[in-house]
Length: 147
Image (tube, rainbow, N blue to C red; front, side, top):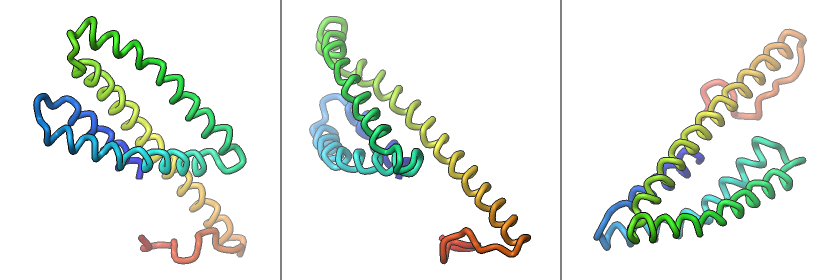
C-alpha cells in the first residue's frame, strides 16, 4: 500500500508540472480527491503496524501535527512562486516533487527492510519453538507457499 501511496503522490506531482493541459489538470484533481482519504488511511495503518497500538495516538498525533507545521510553509511557497518565479508554480512544485520522491522511496525501503527483519525474527522463533516442541507462531494459512 505504501508503494501505491508514493506512486500516486509522484503522479500527482508530475501532473502538476505539465503546462497548458486541461486533461492533466483534471486528472490531477481527480487523483488528489481520491488520494487524500487513501493517504490518511494508509498513514494511520502504518503508524499502528510499525509503532503498535499502545503508542498509536501519540505517533499519529505527531504525524498530523508535523503535517500541520509544514502547512505553514505555504506562505513561503506562495512568496517564492509570485516574487521569484513570476507566478509560475512549477519550480516550487518540482522541488516538492523531488522531496516527496526521496522521502517516499526512503520510507518504502525502510518499511520493506523492517518487514523482512520481522519475518526473519518470526522464523527464528518458529525454529526455536519447533526444536523445543512448542507451538507454531505463524497465523493459520500464512505458512510456506501462502500468498
